[in-house]
Length: 111
Image (cartoon, rainbow, N blue to C red; front, side, top):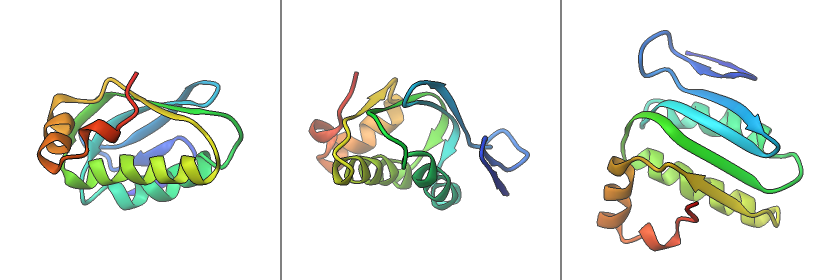
């Protein structure tokens, strides 16, 4: 796995990509799992250090586990610490199910 400014690439169908799509907006694709989340966090924390509100569009997520949900919560904490507003669009049903079972679905700022 390699980390580039364009995203995290593993060379298979679960490769994670983080692509800017608008001011403060990022399109996430690939799998957000225990295997990929640490690298995604390192890359995204650098990208999120800029100014302005943040939107993550998760429409391209192919697979997620509880580490993916933990990543969203960390993004929320990071945004709050920087006094930024964060929004998640197109949260996959699998992630919403994990959030519901975990009792945190009500804290996710969804668009």
